Image (cartoon, rainbow, N blue to C red; front, side):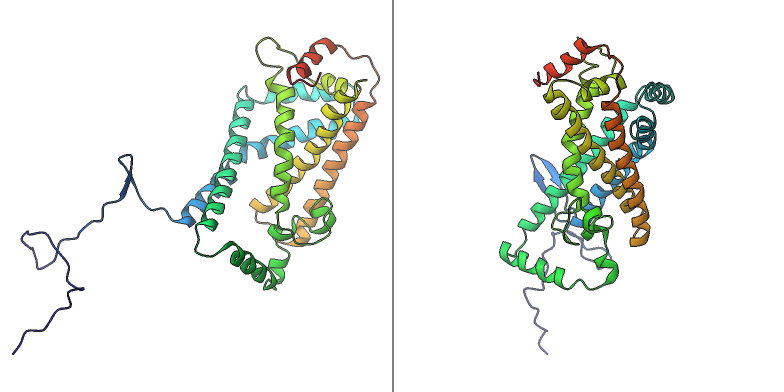
Amino acid sequence: MSSPRHDPISLKEIPPEPIEDGKAPEIRKEPKKLFGIPIYPVSNRSVVLGLRRVQKYSTIPIALYFPLHAVNTLVVPALSPGSLPDDVLMMVRELLPSFTTKLLVASIALHLGSGAVLRIWQTWKQYVGSGKKGHRRHHRKEKQLRVTDAAERDSQRLIGLTGGLSGYFVGFNRRFSTSPQVLSGYILLPALGYHMAIMKFIPDSPGFYVDVDFSFVKWILQNDDWRIKWLAGIIPLSLLIYSGTYHIVAGACQYLQIRSLQARRQWSNVLFALTLSGLVAVYRLSKWSPTLAGSTQYRKIFEKIHLL
């Protein structure tokens, strides 16, 4: 009787060592190395989830700080633009620890960094796929056309906080190629960077040490130089108020998983009230008439950024 033939493809090469218990020893595949450092495969899901968690939990310091700052800058000046905002500001400064600014900067850096890496990663994964660019666009359009579920149609990812005008600034459609949350972040980033530069980083830098409070804001908004009043004051402050309030309130809805469109509309009312109060505060601060001191020191800040 002839012995059964074995398919050579199914045979497994093993090292010339004694086999114990009749089992072939496992052959471990060596990981690829880059500059001598082993590189282990990482799934796309784990990378995306990890970056999203970093982006989510990095907002905790901002979420805790925002209510105090919003009351101090958006609500109080709208009610009384005199000395009350500075009194509340001093009270807030006494309540907060000395490392608050560093903590907020680190939190914002983590939030931005993880978001940027996530976007780069997703873009790279799309382009290394096997499909062509035109095919991907066609597939994406077909996928959008197949969205028929009511919950998905009302998704914050597609229509923003509430959809339409209030959901996407001046939106004429309910769906957009760029998420309103992402767009508000794009607007907020330069506005916030400029705001922190003139309110914190430059005044606290060596050679300046300017005490910045609401007198500085009033000086900007009441300045005779249109560059300071409009380019350095009204326009960036208005953008900061709307984009910042929208980004934080809509982001809170997203992270708290508030999916109901009716509930999001209630949050939209909070957003509208805060934004309107902030714009009223800007107007009232620009009309406050008493003489303001410190103009020489304030001008140095804008000379530093070459606005004067």
